[in-house]
Length: 151
Image 1 (tube, rainbow, N blue to C red):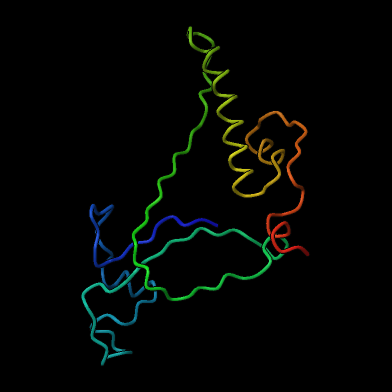
Image 2 (cartoon, rainbow, N blue to C red; image 1 turned 180 degrees about the horizontal axis):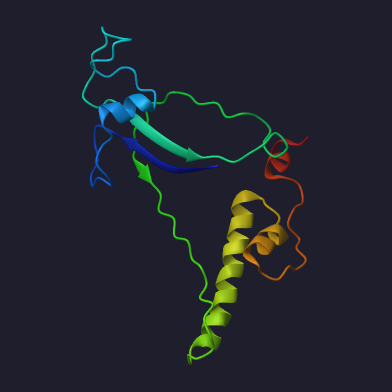
């Protein structure tokens, strides 16, 4: 699970995109905007909305409980930027190929280690997904939540 962005619709500087329209906000479940026939007595500021986008992938075997959300007074903006790097798989016709490939292996191993440390995932599973060589690891075998809470 990770947070992609959290955005206070009343303020942005700089704005990553145009604010959502009232129709778009209603599609997200915002019912308190002016003109909503199901709540005609509710009046509000133009965009008194805080939008959060999470990416979540889990099942009951890998996550101990369902997520619970709660209201908070924190309206701090956050926007993540994700860079996906695909290695160059061209031929050997460049004088820098050997140095590139050596640095690539080191970079990918560091990325795999970072992901394993952040998530608690098995390093060999990560390496297999990245098509890296599998090596023996001293990493814990239990899921991260078992290491925190136990069985």
